[in-house]
Length: 237
Image (cartoon, rainbow, N blue to C red; front, side):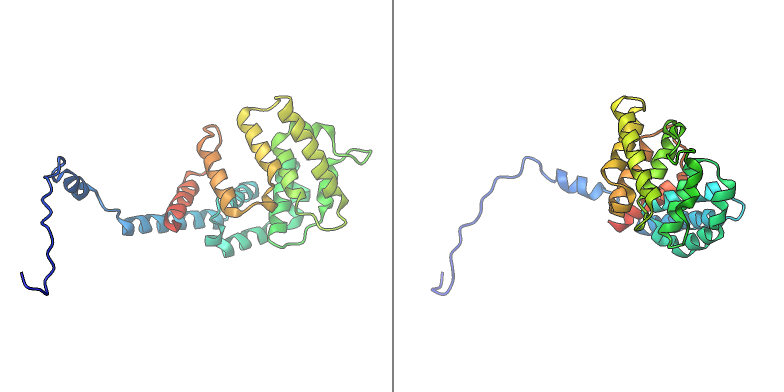
């Protein structure tokens, strides 16, 4: 060996007990067809778009669809369609055609979220002669939750919305404490009380709402929308 060369010992390792097992396993893995995933995502997106723009839907169905689109964190795909749909649901609609607390509260919240002026006076019909929220509302848990979320859209000086927060918070906590609701509904109530929609991060709410839908077999949700939300989450990763 010349003086300029470096001597290295030959590595005389024993053959691996596994042989080429892992090489065979790795070669058997199927690659993800990203093109097919993207195409499926786009197809579902167009289906959801058609649902939002469908003029034949009843206003209540449209409200619930838009709410779910937003809570699943995919509303950014349909900003114009949602704005157009909500614009058609004029503020006067809820005062004259929606007798139930859930629909009125949901409509109120969605309009305010969209920046559309709507008076909180639409909630006055849910008060009794003494100016307090009717005690009968306590039995409408879904309506109470909707009113609770809507009340957080308050601006300064809207006393009725401050009263709504106090009223719903007190009675929702009581319903959970006294086991007057199912465990699943109690979970939804506690989630809302801990962090209302107005104060939560959209991505965190989307994950929670998706898990809630998946674990609630008796809840009627649009499967196309749910699948689109799952594909969107997968692609964003």
